[in-house]
Image (tube, rainbow, N blue to C red; front, side, top):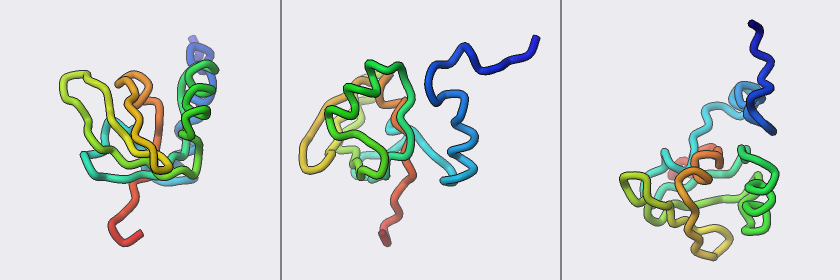
Length: 103
């Protein structure tokens, strides 16, 4: 049976295209405390993406991980000067390009 990506909503099925265009992307869950990334892609249903956008988490925005709580806890981030806490399931759908220390 051919997999046409229908089981994924939104941009999930296009992740490989973004990786080819922007290089290696990682989720916010993969960033260490103090590490920054530039948002490239938001994955999730329309409601989640809308809420992230309302919080200022949109493509081309720099996001810094302040504290990632282990064992499935939330992630505290700094976005446009504001501290926010988002759940693990939402954080894994925020794909970023890691900023190097030189940037």
